[in-house]
Amino acid sequence: MYNILMLDDDQEMIATISPLLLHSGLNIQHIFSATTFSQGLDYIREYDIDLLITDLEVEGLNGIDDMQQVKLIKPSIEIIVVSTHNTFEYAQAAIRLGVKNYLIKPLELEPFLDSVREVLLHVNIARPAIEHTHWAQGNHFQMQRHTIQNHIKLNQLFAPHAYIPQEESVYQSLGLHGPYYAMIKIQYQPLTSNQVALTVADHYLLNYAVMNLAVELVHNQWNSVTFETDECEVNMIMQWDETSYLQGWHHKIRQLNQLGQLLHNHINNYLHIPNVIGISQILKGNEFINQLNIQAHRALMWHTQYPDHHVFYYGDMYWKKHEVSEPTAVIEENKGKNPYNLIVSQVKAYIEKCYGQKGLTIHDVAKKNHVSPNYLSYLFKKNTGFNLWEYVIKLRMEESRNLLLETDLRRYEVAERVGYESPEHFSKIFKRYYGISPSEFKQLQA
Image (cartoon, rainbow, N blue to C red; front, side):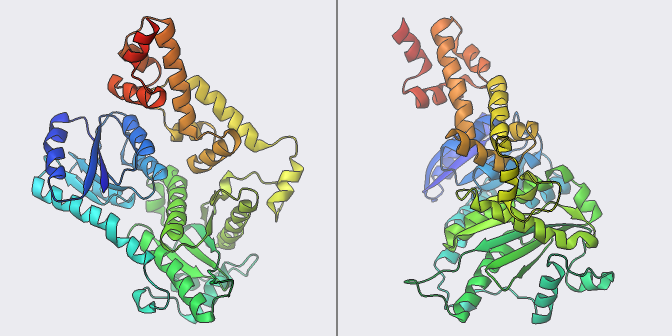
């Protein structure tokens, strides 16, 4: 059964559409509604939401790029945007960020229901179809592999300290146009049956399955070149020309992190293959192209230090100024300083100061502390035992309890003090946290 979240401040539209969806023949369990972006994020964190239907004009949603926050919290969620912005640029940006459909208000109900049916069918059938594919059925995979010659050339080109050709035609022939590049390296463990190693044919199909899934995820959304190594690795070269890079360039790293998380989740969930993702920085120019491989490989190595984390961005790591081949060397050099604990301490101090701020997001916290949201969430959980947003809610609930005990503030005033725009939403969170509503809590103290 499906859970749907409708994020829109038009309550009349929600009241009209919700019963239509519930009686549309779709297997819908529950339809949630939220009127602000931060309230919607809370629902996505707390419930298993399959589909988000969102307007772009709700309070706290500052442009379509904020949809990345939704995908970071729940990578598998599908999104339909409904908007009054009838422009190609908005629709193009939405599709680039993984939005499944972009509909214009006022909604035509039949096309809207058709769109919801199509997206939920995708949730239920399209991805899991990969899960049930047997490796022997190689004809299920239709992706075209590189020729042997190009496979060799790509591996040679991206090898550490490789000779870098000057001729532009070499790169063009391999589909590399740049000038901006980043590498996502997927390292996975080969499957075995009863401790018996896979045959060459099995290994070939396994490689192919990982590549196929990776290519499918970026299809029509990223300009990329994907190739395998001779080991259990797949490399994805993401590239941008000058124009596309400068459009929202400050969001590129966030998008790469989100894509890395999607890759890990899909390979793990649908192919059942343990995997780790390493992501390089974005570098400009063919002369730095083999640095991408070095960076992505180093990022991967941090999995040995943090085995319960699976997506690593090179730019988040603490490196020595000179060449380092192992992350342990950095750790040894900085014993007693532990930069990771320092980051978590700074983040805790920031949250304790700003938890009452309306519209606070993980991205705000990460940006203030100069790390990616994905990596920050991991560090915080590892060092405190709390999910980062659980910690925000903990502080908000403890403060609201104190305010209810010690002051005569009304419910809406308490909600505002601890960062909630909606008193109703505050009451729901309070009851879920303490088991009783704020008014019931107040009566018990009387």
